[in-house]
Length: 119
Image (tube, rainbow, N blue to C red; front, side, top):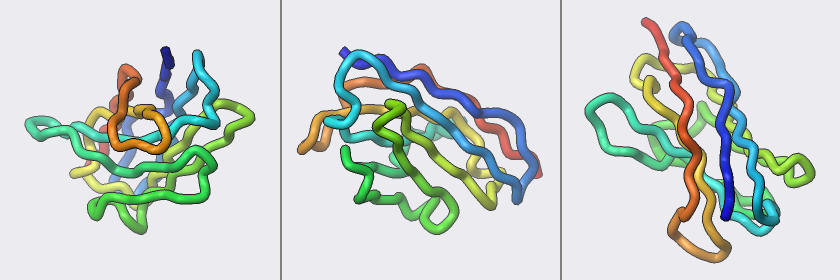
């Protein structure tokens, strides 16, 4: 089992920045593939970024490419999402998730943190 806890969400003006954190426990973090997802109001959940266990490879969704950056600190069992140039359409609940490596499924999910971007 893996427990994930997101933090860092909040209200920010358009053009601003936020940094989300996701702390993991329960399994060796360095073996996990991590992802950040977003669910906007009335929309399906979308993947924003996937980061491999070593942190050297990240894959971004088109909606956040060039504005968001994911990183991880395996010593702290934490993955981060730096969000810059935020837009109102970035509003939603942000989730981190974990899965095995190699793999494509995410088996563990955090409870989510709300991000609201005002215009």
